[in-house]
Image 1 (tube, one colour):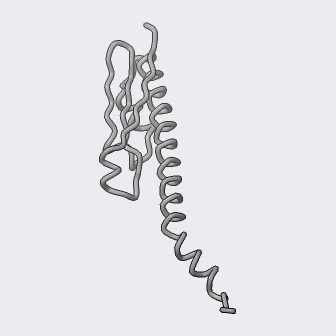
Image 2 (tube, helix red, strand yellow; image 1 turned 45 degrees about the vertical axis):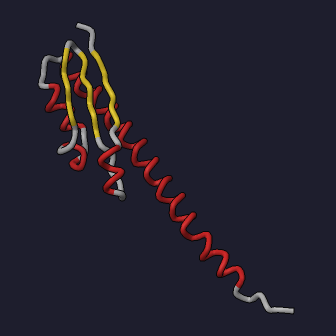
Image 3 (cartoon, rainbow, N blue to C red; image 1 turned 90 degrees about the horizontal axis):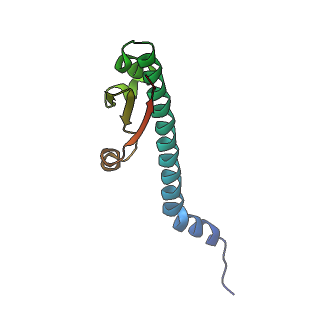
Length: 108
């Protein structure tokens, strides 16, 4: 009979790339979900500012964290505030392709 002392270690090493890939995908999904929530909250802040006849774009930017302010796109038109935001990503090529959007409106 042959000894099998290192078999479990070899199996773990074989599965490690898959585990890292799944972990990276889960982290990216969490980042996208967080960006969706931030964009929604910022759009609501802009709509509330619009209802109060204040600067909606400034309110949107103030509602976003520092990493989101620079790349955020804000569009205000006819009582509707739309916010587009790029979620953070560890993969640069992926971060250029991902974008989330949210909008809120106010009846005038």
